[in-house]
Image 1: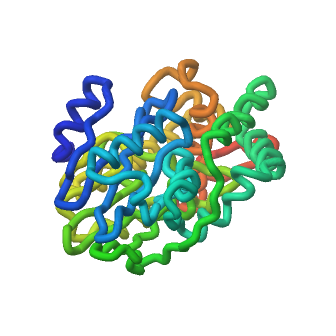
Image 2: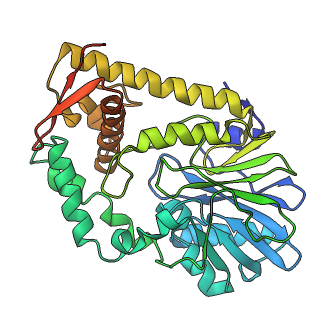
Amino acid sequence: MVEVTGVLQKAAWDRDVMPPVEKVRPGLWSIPVPIPNNPLRYVLVYALELDSGVAIVDAGWNTEDAFSALCSGLEEAGGSLADVRAVLVTHIHPDHYGLAGRVREESGAWIGLHPDDAAMLQARYIETDDLLARMREFLEEAGVPPMKLPDLNMASMMIRSQVTMAEPDVLFEDGKQVDIPGWDLQTVWTPGHSPGHVCFYSDEHRLLLSGDHVLPRITPNIGVHTQQFPNPLGHYLESLLKVQNLGVDEVLPAHEYRFADLGARLDEIIIHHADRLAEIERLLRDHPGLTAWELSIQLTWSRPWDQIPDFMQRAAVGETFAHIVLLENHQRVRREGTDPSRFFLLPES
């Protein structure tokens, strides 16, 4: 169990209400921005006071409610949207990147992203035909039944309207300082949840703004899909080790609530994935030749499979596939065929 430092955030989470705008440290504010129709409820935008304005880490979805919450949160912190000079985006998922373009239009702020996420923008939010075609091929390989295929394939298209597509002005480099006067923020490239996911680390303040990389209660979705590295879970586990030895007193995640004892939380996440790998091995031992879809249906989730909406089922299948790929890389599993692929447990050497 982590040590909760965002006590008001945790209390609000338990009551299923929005947490307050909070002054986390001198010059650093936490602003909750709502996410529509999503169990995560909100993204935590962090505002860093500058001599000439404010920088924000992440921005929220492009909805009127989110935009209003961001504006009112900045006002409660003593500023306004017009004061924003920079938008540091941890990754391009809509709840983090969606409002970045609108913020730039209103304030003239620069937008920063890691190159590996910036490279995906056009295919993800503008010219999507090829992405959809490749996603359908992946879902067929995963064994998704024909009757479910159209719904899962189109599951992410409904959110395109909640993103104002904006090319970044700044590309973050791993290990380099971000040009935010008065703040010693170092970029830590942490691929896994997305190829270009980054955290921001302050050695002076002993803080890690962790985006979705490390959350206090849940694990981020790490899934195989057409815009991922071939072994996303392998990259993610390596990325956990990158933040393991940082001098961190408090973690500021993008969801849920702030917490301490980063090392203990990393151990919990690593154990979670080890347990999931073992669960897949047991299923393949008992039922050789399962597809990723058939495995997903039988795995343990936070709710029954038939209660999981389509877009989350698709994410779950990608997550199952990511664990299978890691097992393949460790010579624990082999696959046969492609339409669909079926998986078999290999004997231990």
